[in-house]
Image 1 (spheres, rainbow, N blue to C red):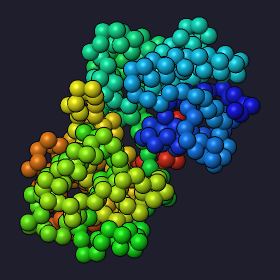
Image 2 (image 1 turned 90 degrees about the vertical axis):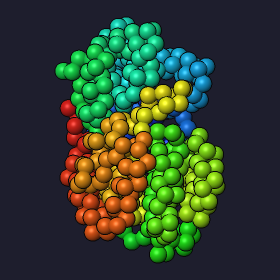
Image 3 (image 1 turned 180 degrees about the vertical axis):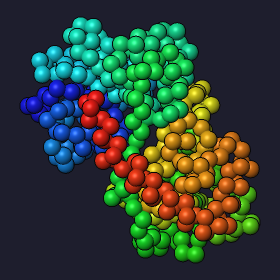
Length: 386
């Protein structure tokens, strides 16, 4: 536990080494700020000791449950309340940044009422859809939103969601995720991976994402099945683990695609760029979740599209959620109806048939990543509100 507690305190349930898009955003935004201006309160996770040695940031690690059961979430919220009050009561803390609207937002709201400490709220999209149908949770969220000094959204779509929910649009600030254009850059295809997966002479489709319903890997498997007779050299590489793996593997087996679909599983962050550079087309037809437990969940932005673009690859994404901020339609990639197998198939086919267009989209994506989404550019937006 560090000795220094700085003027701004970020409270988040997601921070590396936890694998999380939210955690990646916080790490990259805050590592580029003046180190003496903030501290980060976050959970312990396996490997955190080695991770925290990388940067000279004031990171406070506490024991908070990581489960997703109702009991775990209740304990998580109560734990956050206790820890936040322990550290927020320090005289030096002048502002809180609450990384989640409910568990941390409740603590921020109470700290403001009791300790008079203002707070900034970070939101990512779909929270009002997933929790807004509960009158009790809706009431709490609106109280948290109305008392926040600022509300940071990750996309135009999320901004529109919160305006509809009644948030004061004057408080809303958009800070999108970014990309490390040094780590993610065009390179030669890894000879090791080409040999490992027998990809020589193949057209490679790639998805990097959790194996969840809203990521749409099933639509690419179906697309592959429809295109395989016409394009026998297509291979689909799936990077990631998740709850949908069993169903996706069954789809592959039932369609006889065992030689054309590769489940690469978990890949360490430092190796991910090699996988992007392995592919010809990055595709993730994201959509809203229909599963009852996560109904209405959608892609708040889609950082993976930026990462693939930064590696010079064309991308295909679903016309759902905040992905329209991540993909410049027809320039860096294609947006499709993620529930139309015909539209997904035609988008994939159009890029398979046109290598020159793929190349042009990849170049445009790389330029856009460097110009608009490099973390150094995005981090500057945080400086004045930290």
